[in-house]
Image (cartoon, rainbow, N blue to C red; front, top):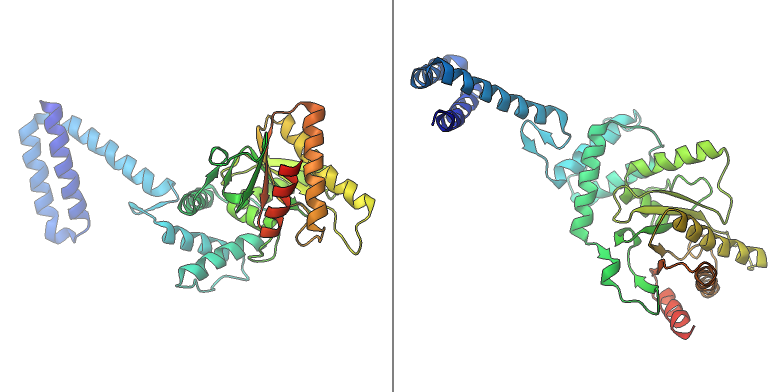
Length: 336
């Protein structure tokens, strides 16, 4: 009985205290003191002590939440727009060259500014509060945009799948990033390359992770090899980063060997890490100018050979963006 009464009166007092603290003391102090006095007489000394301890605990929790979480300010949980502005301001303040810049009012321009700031930021540590807000923001954006699961796809043949869409929205074991030799992502603001997209939507942790890998390695990533990292805020488990050959003029046998090595290196690394499904982008066919038809032939040939030689049960998704690549891969997979 006393415990129930303590809870009810506690809610009343919390409400009263909140109201009192929001107003001037000279207008409300007598009212607040009167409320506490009445409760004290109703419960007795022991009951009041229990209630006081309970209220103190509740207030401590409320204060703790307001201080230690990045998404709550003065008891108010930030919405997506507020989180976006928070992240922009933190990144602007981080670099003295950008301090004082105004945040656009338009949500589209805000998103472009946030992505640009993430793209140009050098790999470095940032506080946990920023990461908490960033992770919540990116995961909500992902949820709002929509995720495509492997279970939603129909195999073209055997363990091979073909999907046209944004690879950063694909939920599978690992996705493949067509990286550059520096391996820390694309620094061009809002560039449309897959490297930029993956680093943007994974979050700034991915660039730092890659930079630390490269620092330990001590040299740029050779063409045809691969590295594996966590995916952070992407729906997949891992990201495999590989550097494809850059074509300047006519394709030579060495270019074809290096491209095949990209696919083989990713498959081997995925197998070593227990990855059950992998999504390949069209490596080297964008800014690296590898001809689409021949690149697709090498991709399918290499994956088929790997699975035949190793007996791997890994599911393989060929992810395409262009209609041209969709038709090329569909023909190769169905005719083979």
